[in-house]
Image (cartoon, rainbow, N blue to C red):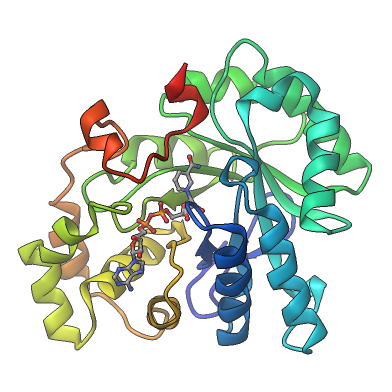
Amino acid sequence: MFDLEKGMVLLNSGYGMPILGIGCFRLSQSQAEDSVYWALRDGYRLIDTARIYGNEEGVGRGIQRAIDEGICTREEIFVTTKMWTDDFGDGDEAIDASLSRLNLEYIDLMILHHSQPSNDVEVYQAMERAVEAGKLKSVGLSNYYEPEDFDRLVDAATIMPALLQNETHPYHQSTVMKEHIAQYGTVMESWFPLGGRGNTQVLFDDETISSIATEHGKTSAQVILRWHTQMGFVVIPGSKNVNHIKENLDTLDFQLTDTEMAEIAGLDKNIRYYHRTDEQLAQFAGWRPDFEKK
Ligand code: NAD
């Protein structure tokens, strides 16, 4: 299913998905356009955005630029977007709106951004209808952290989620959920793979990670990204830095040893960086997701 050599995973929907892509959280429209374009130019074929990031149009422009320049075709790339909880009341409209903002005829993977028991089953069914209609190829979930919550949705689903995107990094290794979703053929995808903006240095400076990096002549970021893919996680590091975008892709050509994997396994602290105090959140240029403002 997970092919490290080809850099692809075969999803339970029957579609192939690249195991490493670019994440677009906190990028403006123009930053998203440039970052997506640079990523595709460098060889990335997976892009992750969301309605709530406010940059789907920019992502669409970056893709179009790359296609116009003959860098890739639409069929060669895999585009993920996510539906925000406020839109769960009218999933059909939300899917059409994302398609229109991205300027695409189909979306490779649409994800429900957060568990929302009041109406996530109904909106998941809207995504299933959109698969029938050819608007979506695969459907997935994000931010379901309890097996019972995942099963609540899966029990009502006809199409099994292809993927679960949860906060996952060496300090939060998502072991329970990874094992739980395997029975459905659902793959785990890591968000905040490097700890997320503001936390990355803690992971980069971790003694275990930095000494493994020295051993391989790689950066700590590269070691962490390689750990994700060797764990069987699809990974989508976010960046608007042309050099980091290149560096992050350059992680498919080296191998962490079993001992190194075991050492990193020992770092799990079950810490979610997303859980922050209001003061910490305020440091982040005023960005707060809608659900936290309520
Ligand atoms: P991340 O862990 O990828 O870290 C991003 C930070 O790392 C940025 O500050 C970036 O400048 C820095 N960085 C990237 N590459 C680097 C390198 N090689 N060297 C040094 N620094 C580097 O966090 P993220 O971007 O928030 O998460 C990844 C993606 O996951 C997002 O872009 C988004 O697409 C997705 N995401 C999803 C959810 C969700 O709720 N589903 C939440 C957050 C993020």
